[in-house]
Amino acid sequence: MKKHLSRRNFFKSGSIIAAGIAFAPDIVKTIGDNTGGYRIRLGAPVPVSFTDPVEWVKAVKSLGYSAAYCPVSPGAPLELIKAFRNESEKNDILIAEVGVWNNMLDPVESKRTDAVGKNISSLQLADEIGAKCCVNISGARGEIWDGPYAKNYSKETFDLIVETVRYIIDQARPKNTFYTLEPMPYMLPDSPDTYLELIEAIDRKQFAVHLDPVNMISSPQKYFNNAAFIKECFAKLGPYIKSIHAKDITILPELTLHLEERRPGLGSLDYAVFLQETRKLKNIPFMLEHLNSQEEYLLAAAYVREVGAKNGIFF
Image (cartoon, rainbow, N blue to C red; front, side, top):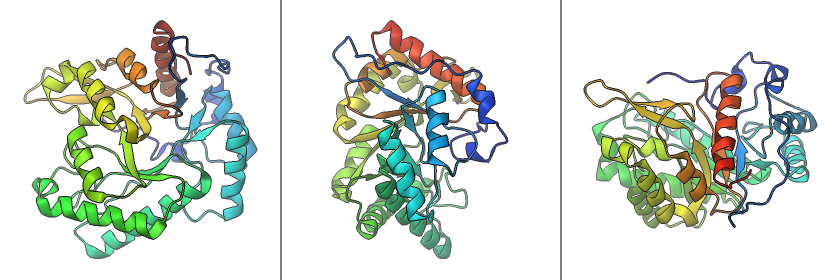
């Protein structure tokens, strides 16, 4: 698949925040949803790292967002974490998630230990800064941290995921936030049903759901019936959802099956249904990701708002 400038490395880019602001929409006014649902909190990466919470708030607001990715990393001074939390709460900006993005099932034990340690510190950071969740993938049973391996689906791996997630939550002891796993096409969870199986097996109040429908569309059947699949995701996982990743997907006429991510609006995902289901949930961040430039993020945000406006859904 094409590599994207995702939330995972967007802060490392040379983009200048002012360049993005030039393309930003006017700040979205507070508008009630005339269809009876909740307003959706749209967010995306903000280029450039910030050590001043006030400037960070200005940057987020200048782009018209009411949700944001966590602006600091584990190990940041507690005073700085508190300052970002205070400014975000004061300005009604919801910190969506603290992303970990490592392989906590690494076959090399020393690497696995380090990866699990980062999950614990990231979950603690999420609790301290007031994020909705901490998120990682479950991990892969091979050298590539997010790679497809047959062993990803073994009973042994399922049990190891359960044991590891329990350990992370029990060590971090979050009071207000949640630990979540991002669904992936070739590791667990890869469907609403496998996510429910993990929720039951992990059996921890602070384990919840990070929803990414595109990552679970791995067949032509799901692709061409994605509206029904999106509804299934929300019907089964809705009470557990804490954050959502929003992107798009297209199928290519290449053998064998070839699916690729796209910017919202350039694929076939039914965004009207996606937004209609999201607005049923209160205070859930709807986060754009995996795009190459600030200009693309602004185009994606404009498309999402346009679909929302056509369906009486506001942000």
